[in-house]
Length: 369
Image 1 (cartoon, one colour):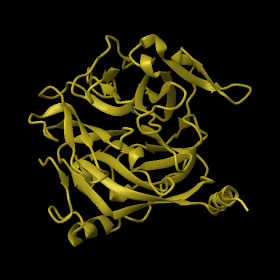
Image 2 (image 1 turned 180 degrees about the vertical axis):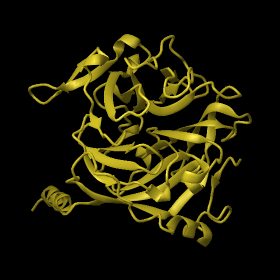
Image 3 (image 1 turned 90 degrees about the vertical axis):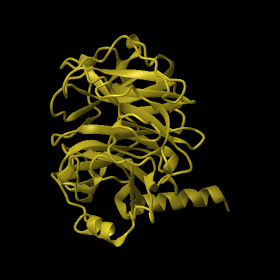
């Protein structure tokens, strides 16, 4: 176990042997079943720069992320002793300062031992940290989930007395929608993606609550569709909720983030296992979504447990077209070199010709005569 990133030179992540392992048949996009949504009119595609790959903290999984307004990225891991935490624990939280590729410094270490919960998603709002937590109350996929709050970046947590139950009648939150760094959005609400509690979900729902009431059970409302004016409608009954994303091939681990430079939300979802992912874009957390990547063997992975693909907002550049991707996969053989560790890779979005022309016109108009 190492407390630092596996850096080039010290651990040789850019060495020819690893580059060959990554590049041997893994760069080409392996197309999967028909994507659930039409091609994007904004993003023509995505390039995963395998030569930038690095990894750290072997033995930790999940690696949820959120961005603070000061440029810090907070991350949470499961089942490891990393970042300065001396005992293996179900969860811990750490800070990454200075951009991608720096050390993870623990800001909170969970109780020693396993099965005390997993922090599957993080949200930073003005320095207050929130987490979507799998309580591990029952075997997967039926555990209860909670939303926790921390005023000290994960050193201590305030926990509610109630849970989103792991039953078929429940829409259980899966992840926060991360907007601008340190801000849930400009409307006072925090948005969460969720699923009904079934072994193999294929629908994703959207829920929200005022930021200050995320630990209040009565504050949550569910997306129920668009009204006559095209505005989102919300209701307190999960039975009336309508999905915001549907993929009959599967919809595991949905994560959405606002790409300010692009002016679009980016959504990552697995259509079952670790290497079968899709990347979509849309104007709002409720869509409508369009596809710009849909693969069966992403980076060469043939399966394994999908533990999320995330784009930290503090690590977006070049008008939102350069991204850094944090991801995790569990399964020694199907996940390959990406098994049970924090993985990081740079990606570039290619805009469509129509979007490129639109941006050029906008720049010309802004420059004036």
